[in-house]
Image (cartoon, rainbow, N blue to C red; front, side, top):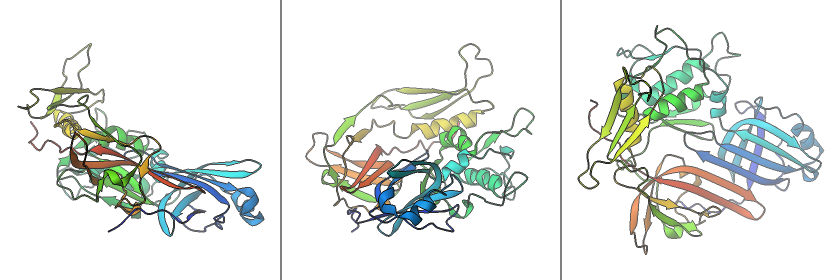
Length: 383
């Protein structure tokens, strides 16, 4: 059985974009602190601090040449690569060097879309065909990074070979091309993912250099680990909160000042247990069809019925070194089951890992996690 354990050593390597031409690593004694995280539907960050006095003259000279986006940072926990991404900022004081970096989704935040977004074809040979939202996301990324007029070279961020997909079972239609169906939406690729595809059921994260284009886990997915309260160092709290509970989720593009021509989508079923409990989402996005609005409602239904019981881990607490889960299994989005025996609520339910926050110093390592309840999407047909 895998256990989290306690890191014996951390190493940080600076290298050219994509992994080539590594600098000499600072000695373990010169590396005074490391923080890194993994997150879902957002860009994770890492920071290392190096004591200049212990790094040596050669290392110091190389650190002075570190250039944001030309160079990347890789972090190793013992011998395992746990984080990688482009350098964003370098700060030098009299005594230390601090290097801040972001994961590879930062490249998608710095590259604007130059392709038509019209995924309506039912022809599988058409690269812009109807399909799982994860496939559409990969196609948008691939078409923008393959090359073209504005590319310094094909796949200059070195991302395309490291994309992994976990497709939804439901096909999606997506377009953002203006009223004439021929206009390009010139926004960062990451904004397209966040504003248009995540509400339709996309879930993305990174592990090392890998970009995972996945879907929200359901109770049908296997658990990566099964934890008990003994798996956590420090106190935990159980919270059953009905603030976001709903048996029906409505999504509409109505404007309060003019409801002419507006549409709506609804997902869910009236509950005999809770009665009719509605949750309304308003969107100002243009060009959405009733099917688009239903997709958003379907993706927003999960985790609202039944009312979830959340596991709250106070700040500063984290996983115990004996927790039966390895750092490799701590991938945001995966299912992790938790059983809280001895509590009045009698919790035993599946959760989804949303964040991993790791801090390492001379005093040791702390691995913090955030867990949110898993909810199944409504499986009914679209209206």
